[in-house]
Length: 457
Image 1 (cartoon, helix red, strand yellow):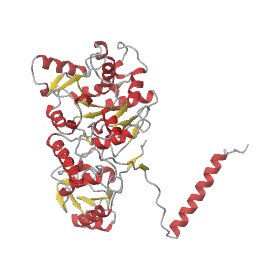
Image 2: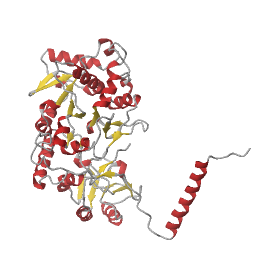
Image 3: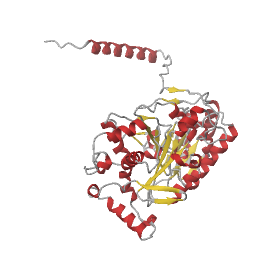
């Protein structure tokens, strides 16, 4: 019997054949290929009523003030983590956030300045703790504190950290139900680490244009499992109240049940609490909406600036600590004063922050990113000048790195970081930038509006 293909299958084959013929014709006749649409975006209006005010000020427009008052910022830290990280964050970007909108969780209850730090793990039953070998570190933290010893001397807090993520969601829900905690219900819960930098104006604009009545989970996707990407915690992520409610109302009923604090997810077998959260949410039908590169896990010097990262608003950055947090926050505050807050802070503006570091050549330096390298004559010995010439010949090349027999080009602009030879026999990493081309491209590439990218996934 002859096989009969469904009508939609035959239609697909026909369209595929026609498309191939059209592409072949265009290539043969050297007619330029059409510009296929890039990732779609919105261009929401920007209200500068908060100029010279905190983004959370009640003197902003009614809509902005309303959303700002309904955002709970949740900071995750650790008892063995340098306390200076949290102190710098509280003194800079968190100084713009009203005290009542801030919650801080750790694996140790303590006071940091005038802020109370809640122990996220204290409610986990002894029975459940016995299933997690990492909790020996938790017991050690508590003992150090009781003895008046410095908990920052302890190492290995990262092993325990994965259990805090889910336990924090349990703890918040418990606090919402306790009259003694006086914690009000809010529309949004934004989770950050102590080395996360957030541009509040931009984040509040995004939240203002999303529906908190929906079960939303938003952030920068990590594609460890393509079927279930999870939000990168260091880049900041947010849950709507509806999502937080669904998470806590689903499944396990009592704290005596195995893995109760983890919502039934075997967090021990996973990389991190971020992945565990995504799995628990997926079980109840809530999937991540990814807003990379606006939620971003890079420091300014490792952002790959270019056509895809230019007119987009900066929502967050990661690994910003100590003096770096203070310097970036102060620079952006000065930028807002200079520009009179006429526009949102975009990646093109962040480029201004790192631009003074660009030089023609830097030794013992790697300026390219492994995922974006374009190799030129790989395996053939090549000098720095030959690699530079290859970059000049490639009209899209902004920078390059020469390393022995390797010459790698890049179509994005990136500072990178120090990189020494692996051994005495290894060659130096020498990075170069085509400053003239960079100046030409940045001066002519304007942003008439902020590109609020649609989610992916």
